[in-house]
Image (cartoon, rainbow over all chains, first blue to last red; front, side, top):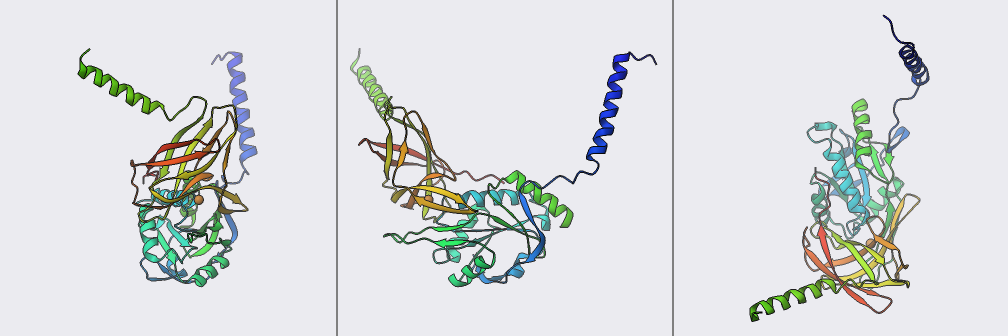
Length: 205
Length: 149
Ligand SMILES: [Cu+2]
C-alpha cells in the first residue's frame, strides 16, 4: 500500500492520541452525579407517627420498597413550593411504567395548622395524585422536621392571620430501605435529578 | 361616507384608542403579566410580570389591588443557607432604562384569597399604583405551567 506521507502522519497521530487518552482516562472515576449529594453512609430515617392526605396513619415504614424524594413545604406557598412539586412530579413521570423502580414523592407539610389532610389532598392531586402527603399534630410534625435537620421558622401572623413559614428547600432522597441516602439542593432540575436517580436505581434498586 | 360606515370607523378608532392608552411611550411598559394556576382551594397565588421604565426618572411600584383577591402584597423570595423565605417589600424601585422582572423564585405579586378558582386561560385585572401618582389596570393571564407527564 502506497500511502502518502501526510496521511500516514495523521494515522500515527490519531493512534498516539488514542493511546494517551486510554492511559489518562483508564483510572478516571465513573461519571459523577449531577444533582444529588450522597451521604457517605445511608442513615436511618427518624421515626414518625403522622397522617397522610387521606387521614390514615403513616409512619417511616411506609417509605420503603422504592426510592423516595421527600420535600418539606406548605400549601400557602405559591412561588417555590409549586415549582418544586412540579419538578418532582415530572421526575417521577420519567419513570412511568417502571413499577417499583419508579421513585415515590413525599410532601411533608410544615404548616399542619392550615394544611389538614383534605386541603393537602386537593393540593397534591393537582400535581400528581400519587404524591404522598404527610401532615399531623403540630408538635409531631415539628419534631419530625427537626429530626430531619429541616429548619422551620414560623412567621408572625399579620392582621388577616396570614403568616409565612421559612423552610429548607433541599429535597431528601430515601433509599428502598427507607434510609436517608442523600439530598438534592436547589436549583432542582428535572433532567439532572432523573438522570442521577436512574443511575442510583439501576445500580441499587 | 354613509352614516353606518362613519359609525363603524368611529368605533374602530375608539377601540384603537383604548388598546393604545395603557402604554405611554416614556412610562413604565409592562409585559408578560401572568398568574401561576394553583391547585383548587389554594389560598395564595403568585403573579409575575416584567416592568421596563422607559422614562428618564426613577419610579417605584407601590401597590397592587384587584377585585379578584382579598389582598395583594409585593413579595420577594429569598434563599439563604439552603432555606427559602418570602418577605414583603415596601415598594419595588424601577430605575430608568432598566427592566425589573417579577419571576418564579424571586419577586412576585402575592395574591391572597382568590374569590374563585382561577383556571388556565382566564384573565384577571390587577391595578398597579406607582410612586409618580399614576395607576394602571393590567390584564394578567392565568397559566397552567405544570410539566406534562
Ligand atoms: Cu409570597
